[in-house]
Image 1 (cartoon, chains in turn green, blue):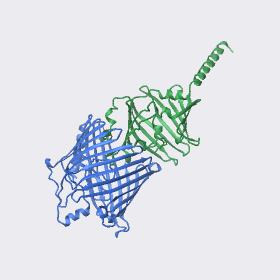
Image 2: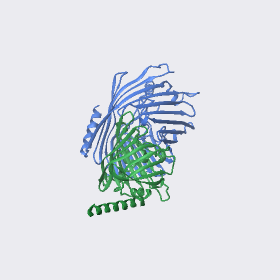
Image 3: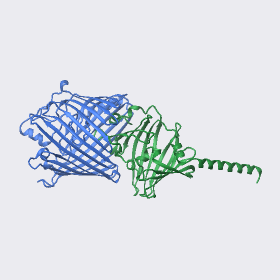
Image 4: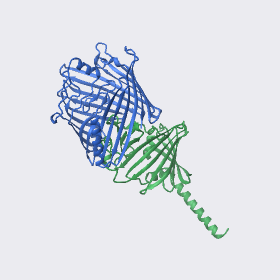
Length: 269
Length: 366
C-alpha cells in the first residue's frame, strides 16, 4: 500500500470514527428537537390533492385548499374543499394554540362551514379524535399536525438509508399507551433533519402503517415535502397527499381570510 | 323566465366588469320519487315524481365573485316544468368591508332543529316534510373585525314563504286572497346581526324588522319585529347551544331553544328543546327534537334518525334516512317518514299524519 493510499484510508477511518462518536452523542430526543427546530414559514398556502386507494383497488380523489399562518401565540389554519362536487365549499377554520411550558395545551377553536345549510357552526375541540382518519384517508388528524415533544419517550436506534438518504432512526414511544399507534420509528435525514419515513406500530407491537415522504423541494429556503404516502399494511389500503401551488410567506395570505365571515363568504380560493 | 335571464345577464356582466378571472360551471341532475306507505288509505300511490336539473356558476376575481344557482324541475305526475332561481348574487370584498347584492340565502341562529331566531329567509313549504330555504332579494353589508363581525341586510322587496297545497286550498275554499305588502320603500325589510367569535364560544345578537313570511287568517301578512340572541359554547366533547327571540308584535312573543351537539368521529348527536310563550292564551308550548347520524365506509354510507315531538299534544314525526355514495358523482338516498297524532288531539304535526311516505332519490353531480 502506497503512502498516499494509507493517508486516505487513515483520513476515512478518522472521519468515520468522528461521525460515529457524533451519532452516539446525539440522543433520540436531541434529533427530534433538532428536527422540531428546523425553520418553518410563518404562513403557507397549498393545494392538496388526496388520493384514497381502497383494498379493492378503487380510487377516490379529494382536493382542498389549505392556508395557515403562525401568529406566535396562535396558528390559524383554514381548509376548504374544492372537489368532489358534493363537498365543494365545505370549510374548516381552526385556531391552534401552542403547548405551554408545563406541557398543557389550550383546546383549539374550530368552526365548520356547510354551504348547503348556509351557516357555520362551532365544533367542540375534542369532537375529532386525533387518532381518527383525516378526511377518509389513511392519515390521522394527528399525523397532519405537529406532535408535542412531551408526548413521547425517545430512543436513538442508529442510522439507516431511506431512498439513498442517510437518516437518523429514532423510536418514539407514546406516554399514552391508549393511542392507536403508541410506537413510531421515525427516519430523519442526517443532513437536513427532514422526515423521510415513519413506521407506526399498534398496541400489539405489530406494524400498522408506513409513511413515506418524497419530492422534497426547497421553496423560499424552506423544505416542502410535496408527496406523502401512507400505507396501511394491515388493511391493504393506502393514501397519498400531493401538494401543489405551494406558496410560503406571501403577503397574499392576508389575515382577513382566517375568519368565520371569510369562510361563510367563500373568500378562500 | 325573462326575469331570470335579465338577472343572470346583469349579474354576469357586473362581475366581469369588476374583474372576475376564473369561472366554474357545475351542476346536479336528480330523480326523486315519493310513495305513500301504510297505514294511510293511499298506500302505494306515487305522490311525487320529479326530475330536476340544477346548474351552478361560480366566477371570481381577487375581490369580486358571482354565484348563480338555478335550474328547472319536471313533475312527471302533471307533466309541468318549473323554472327556479335559488340564488344569484355578486360579492365585493375589497377589505374588511364587503357587500353582497342579489338573491341570497342566509341562516341565523345556532339551533339545528327548531330555531327561535331564524326569521330572515322564508321557506318553501310546498313539500311540508322536506321544507327548504328560499332566497331573498337583498343587499347585505358586512364588516369583519374578527373576533367581531357585523352584517346588515336591506330587503327592499318582500318574499313570502311558499305554502303547502293544503293550506292554499283552505284560503281558496273560504274565498280569502293572499295580500302581499305593496313593493315600496316603506315596506322594505331590515335585519342586522352582530357576532363575536371567542375561545369561550360564539355569541350573536339579532335584530329584524319586516313581515311575517306566512299570512294570517285574513290573508294579510303582518308586520314582524324581532330581537334575539344566541350562543354556542364548546364544553369538552359537546357544544352547548341556546337561542332566545323576543317578538313584540306576536302573540307567541317569547321563544327559546336550548340543546347540545356531540360529534365523536363519525357519529353526530343533536338534541334540542324549543319553547314559546303565548301571551294571548297564556300558554307555554314546548317541543323536543333529536337527531343522530353515523357515517360508515369512510363516509360512503350514512344512516340518520331524527324525530320531533310536541310535549303537550304528544304528536310528532320520525324520519329514518340513509345515503350511499356509489361514486363521487353518483349518490342514492332513501328516507322513511312517519307522522303521528297525539292521544287527545292531532297537534301541529299530527295534522300531516297522512304524509307517511318513503322517499327515494338518485343524484348525479358534475
